[in-house]
Length: 197
Image (tube, rainbow, N blue to C red; front, side):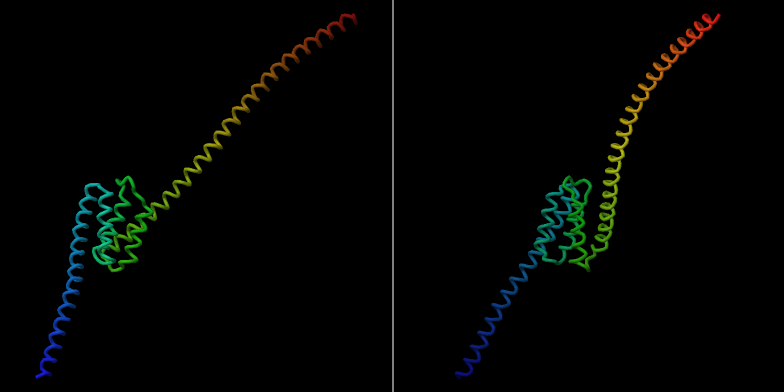
C-alpha cells in the first residue's frame, strides 16, 4: 500500500509541476500575444497619423511597434513606415540620411519581408537624390566662383575704361600740343622766308 501512495504522490507532484510549467509558459505566450496585438494597434494608429500628416506622433507609434515586435512582424512594416516618415516631403523634420538608414536596416534585418523590394527602390531613389544634391551643391559653388570671376572682370573692365579715357584725353592734349607746334613751325618757316627775301 505504501508503494501505491508513493507512486500516486509522485504522479500528483508531476501533474502539479506540469500545471505550474504550463501556466508560466502560458503567461509568456499570452504576454507575447498581447504585445503583438498592441504592436498591431500601434501600427494602425501610426499609419493613420502619417496619413494625417502628424509625422512626430506617427514616428512615436512606429517606434513603439518596433520595441514590441523584437525583429518580427510587424516590426518590418514599422521600419518601412519610419523610413517613409523621414523621407516625406511634407515632414518639416525630414532627414533623408535617416530614411536611407532605415530602408537599409529593413533589407538587412528583415530579408524575407514583403517590404524589402519597396525599401530597395527607396534606397535607390534616396541615393540618386543625394548624388543629385551633391552635383547641385558643386554647381552652385562653381556658379559662385564664376560670379566672383565675372565681378573681377567687370571691375577690371571698368578700370581699363578709365585708363582708356585718360589715354584718350592725353592723346587729345598731345594732338593740341602737336597742332600748336606745327603752327609755330609754320610761323618760323614764314619768318625765315621773309628774311631771305
